[in-house]
Length: 164
Length: 361
Image (cartoon, rainbow over all chains, first blue to last red; front, side):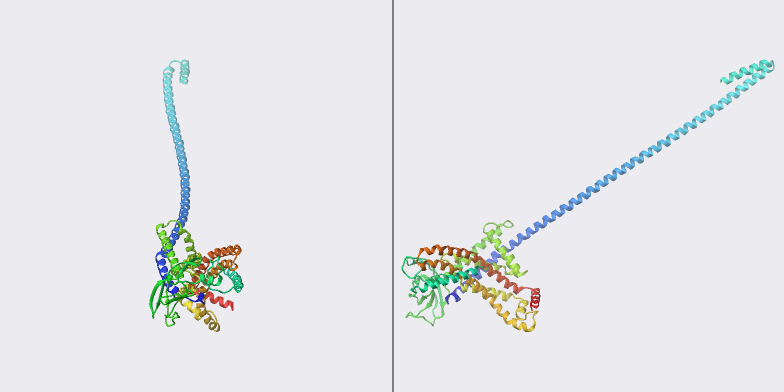
């Protein structure tokens, strides 16, 4: 039957036509199309990956910043604490020093006062001795004349001396 | 699904056609469906046969007995008479001879001086017939279209597709991802040019066949034979040792079964491309026959009223054929990829298969 009998002419021309189409399209159409499709897909994949990477990098950067900030905060706190300690120490030292110095001054003053007092006492003693000697001298001079007079004289001199 | 509808409709129509034909005279066939106004007898079988088979010239339309057709070159060669090239318009009817050649049922035969068939001449007919011309037209369309698309890929490098490029890109990607990659596997790339070419070649020829006055190229057995043969040759030449081992000495199967399987597998090598050939041929030809049958009903009944039923149905089938055009191109490409896949599959496929066999027994 005509319908299912292969035809030589059509087969012949189809072989030529199909071979040409396959060759030309394979070389100049399918090749470039497939490669550019692949290229585009690759670039899309790359871009997506890059975006993902950037995101991850951002996140890590943020985390690093946070850590840095935290560290700075800690450092600041430490510095503040240190400064406080130093200040306290200084204050205490100053206080101690002042106290010590004050004590020393007081001690010196006390010592000065003591020595002044001793000196004054010594002077008073010398003076009293001199007075006593003078009185004794005068008594001795007077004794020779009158006993009563001598007594009056002594009391007079004594009166004088206690006033001193 | 489409094939089932085809079968159903085809059988219905054929029954109708036969019923009404039997009431009519089988008369001279030089009458076409356009001759509605005349009292000549209409033969739907002849009309359909005329439309779905090849012809030396490209018949467009006949009005009032005048045939308007595009003349095509007739190229004949025989060792006895040598090369002969002339226009198909030299054949006016089937009784006239030209240069010792005569047309008989659209076939060119060599005749002797007395007008009898010259049996001594072994004629090679490589004319540019209607089918050849239509196929070449599709080839030109393919070349122009896809070379320009490839050009726009170069021009618009890295940019989004545009125009024809964006229409065909999803189809190309579909062939690559869901046909080639899924059927062939990692070695799909070397088959891509062939798969894309046959897909678009079949699709375009299917579509050209749907144009009124178009040729039924993809519903021609020669056309499908060539493509099936090409698939068979590529499958056989690229096949690896696992493919041959699978056919000749199926692994993982007991010895007696191997002996039974061997001839089956060898037959299978040929039935696969054979089924490709028949499937495409039958689907496209059936579609054409159904459309023509519906339209033919009008002329069988000789009343315009039937057109109210016949024309919408013909339109419906025509639109269905638009879908079938791409579906059959897809099926052909898919199965081709499947056969390529079986030819280049690596070892693990056999292991799976063997396990499957053992599990089945």
